[in-house]
Length: 165
Picture 1 (cartoon, one colour):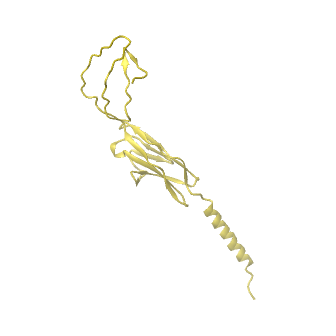
Picture 2 (spheres, rainbow, N blue to C red):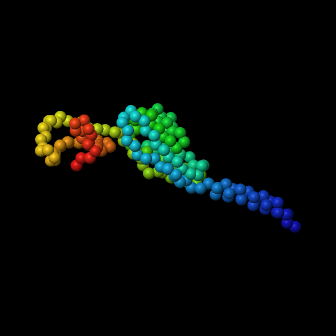
Picture 3 (cartoon, one colour):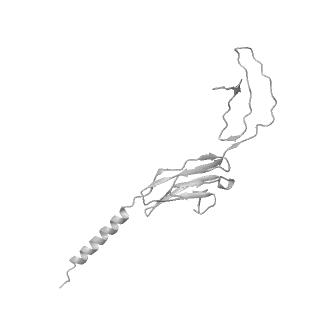
């Protein structure tokens, strides 16, 4: 005679259902927002944001492909926000958000953090520009290298020109 396996079969079935449901309840991580590139002067703050779902997703950060330690002097990481308190040259580069859970991991696109720079205009000779009334004149300006790209504007008789060509 065989023993009654009914209670054991039920217990195995319930255990299997619980295990399967706990594994399948976690979805693969996906980003709801990714970090954006930033330009800041050295010494200034930079804030990068990243968020992912499902709620079980853990977020960490990479700097130039290497995982960041949360205990850095000039960087604070709280949930999906990375804050550079005072930008210096060692913190320039690209940052990526790493989202992972029990199902898998994904990496965001790179957000470049670069320093704002305006090169020297250099020594320029002042030129006198003459033009007949109601005619055009040409004012030349060598634009220095900059990040972001410099926008040239002219001021005539104390007023800024809206457009120049």
